[in-house]
Length: 434
Image 1 (cartoon, rainbow, N blue to C red):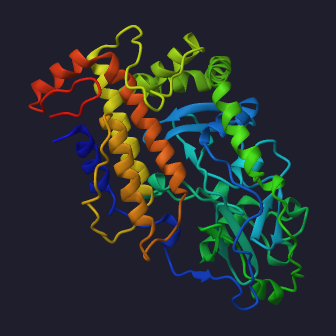
Image 2 (image 1 turned 30 degrees about the vertical axis):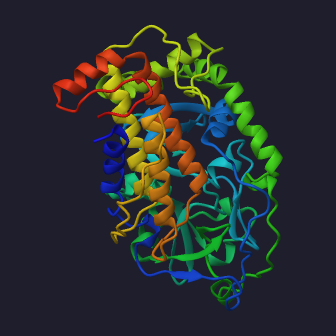
Image 3 (image 1 turned 90 degrees about the horizontal axis):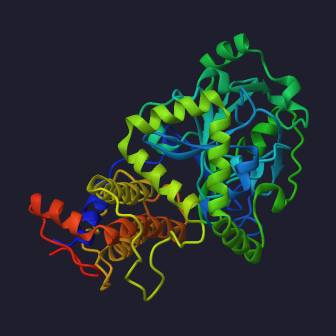
């Protein structure tokens, strides 16, 4: 068995597990030019190409930490921050768009998901490059609309429900008011209203992604709300020209070492976050290995930490890491690939386990390409609930593979001992496991 096949098997085994978080309940999926609700099929501009851009550009306004079972997440500086509270709704050609003056809102309101961390006692944001007008859950009564942030799917699968404090209800007639914050119901009323509210699931496909578009125009008119769609402006909602999007990625990669150093300074400067982060690291070996890898970036800012360039298969070794770090990195790479494949999945098994392995002297990159083929086959299936950016999936899987490849290349003898002990053959630099 090759290492590529071993990791691919782990990925494919996870694929038919769960449905999208947005598929719960009975919803309305609105196509373009259907009834009174007409939404453009393409959002203006280009989306963010890489999560690296979020790390780079959000750093001045918050701290990046590690949340167990979720990944690296962002915590805004604002104490007692609650998502989708400060701002207002705008009815646009792409549905209900959340507009906010918060410096990170261009990203956190239109990409990724929010959840609450018991480890840090704060709300966190998990980045993702799929764009939407707003990633919220809607509810309605005969007189009110309410919304709360959508959580990452892995959190929802663990039984997450938005706490009552995260729900914002207002009279239906005020939902598009620029000062909607003034009309939020107090907590005691929210509890009462929420008890009788029912889900409002209203979606459309925009730029090949299934997005939440909010209350339909007909329902708004029933509450005497004037419906005059405005055109969504690209820059205000985190979309750019293709050239700008590409330049953001290059800048983020050039600034990676500086970002890691500045972010660590932020962690160290907040006693509560620092204490929580240390506890998370010490109790989760996989996170500890990832944090140690980041420390290496700050120590060697001039080095290329992204793995071999095309045509290169040898890596100049730095100080060797212990075997435990090697196995942790390999497992982390496989887990990341599996999670990415799972995020693309539905409940129905689609049976593409025969996706071919590419011929590549680097077994980890071969595995990454195989995962990409598998995810590509899945995305083309008619049962898909939500399209994702395949290029971004492939990029993230490749990055996970390259991170593990760095450690493997530095520790071939140690890894061979571990493989041999487990009856898994041997590996040579640039060759797959026998």
